[in-house]
Amino acid sequence: MTSYELMPGTSRVWIYQSNLPFTDEEVPEIKEQIKNFVTNWVSHNNALRSYGDVLNNRFIVLMVDESQAGASGCSIDKSVHFIKAMGHHHGVDFFDRMNFAFKVGDELKTAHRDAFAQLFQAGEINDSTLVFNNLVKTKEDFEKEWIVPLKDSWHARMV
Image 1 (cartoon, helix red, strand yellow):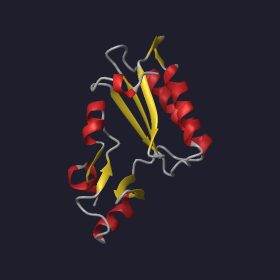
Image 2 (cartoon, rainbow, N blue to C red):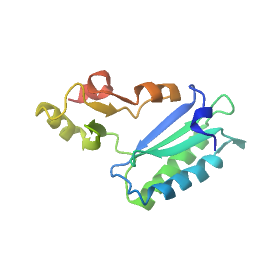
Image 3 (cartoon, rainbow, N blue to C red):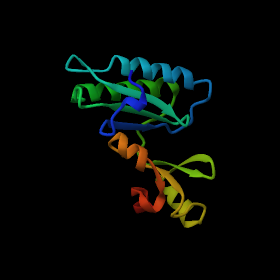
Image 4 (cartoon, helix red, strand yellow):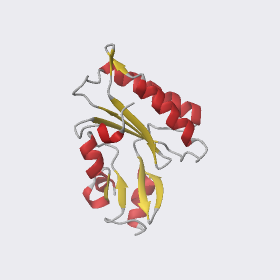
């Protein structure tokens, strides 16, 4: 497993958001499972220079430096299988893309698309509300565009 700092800005990123937060007790086990996965992640028998972590007790982030070896369809399938197994083991869903994460003050909250739109209409969230853009593609984008104001995100189309 490569440390985050050693991953170049062009590294490919996948973000999986859990529908429920992990407990503080679960996080060390999840981090260990992620570490084991990325340490052994290969593409066409080539080790992938990769990184993974759990953030905010809610997100699993995987990265691959494709300048070393590209993530193939099979290796991406392995990561999806890993995330599905993690979800099954922990009783969470990582694949509901209409479950939006956002911040209210310092608190991370989630709402399904319709409820999110209702929160906006009710004025409980607004254009300045910070949202998590889990569609970022690279580490550089992750650092600059993962958490952005609602008005600057694709989420704005949903309200």
